[in-house]
Length: 356
Ligand code: MRU
Image (cartoon, rainbow, N blue to C red; front, side, top):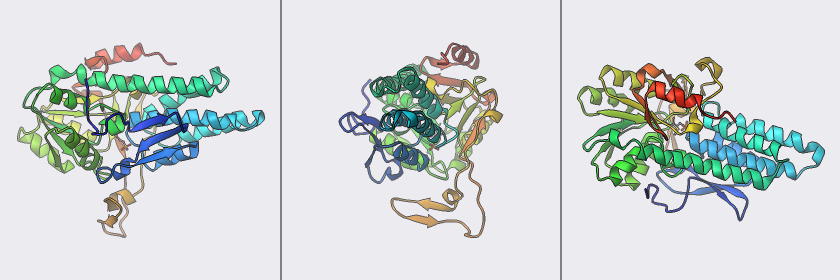
């Protein structure tokens, strides 16, 4: 399947550049107004880019963390042998603490951490594993699209929330992969794009990606989704996940839970789509991980290209949880690299995932 999703042939949203031993990211903060790249040569750069959301979306953050760990190994090899472990551990900790909710971050970082220890900090070996792991995740996203074709019908009107496209996941997307495949198969679909307050990843990024791929879409206010469901204008929901627990509970961008509750009420199938790097093999319940709360400024201001504008009462406080939690009873099925799975099939698959 060849997808010209970004309109930027052969360029990935997260890419290791061998010549300069640096990590290149598309600056997602500028989309849709401008496509610009940043080059990262240190762990400090990597942490800043994740924290400031130059890169965002769980799998893309995971890939960034993997290459960030490769830079951590490079930095460890540039200090004395006595300081090496301390430098490496500190960088590992800094990468892990950039953002708390997307599990891909720690899954990828941990993998390269272990390779570093097994190979006595071999830069070449860890880079090789980082590249293979990222490619594997990208391939899995492609499979999500290919293995869910029976679930997308000509004439479908599908709601998505936030951004789970090529920028957030590299090349294909998780929630968007089925849309690209449908387009390729000549199916006529319309995608309703929740704007996704407060940072507007839907209105800005998902809409831009769908436009690049010439897929019919309409941006809607988040609050319009239930009305459109009640009128039969939305017949499916497909969105991503930032973490999926062993019991099928997902954590995803704030607003996902209301979409799921509304979908249940109006009998609209609700699908969550993710690669295997989004599975949390450690947490037993939602108490075991942290939901990120972000700066209240994101709620009180809107940002355009370079400007930001106050849109709320200046003296009021705002609360800004960035993710919510959707229980499995609200999820119809899961779009995965192994096909569309029921909850039980998903649980069996998770059992078989290698913890290493
Ligand atoms: O990094 P954020 O806060 O913008 O991330 C959230 C997301 O991208 C999503 O919640 C997305 O729907 C799942 S990750 C592809």
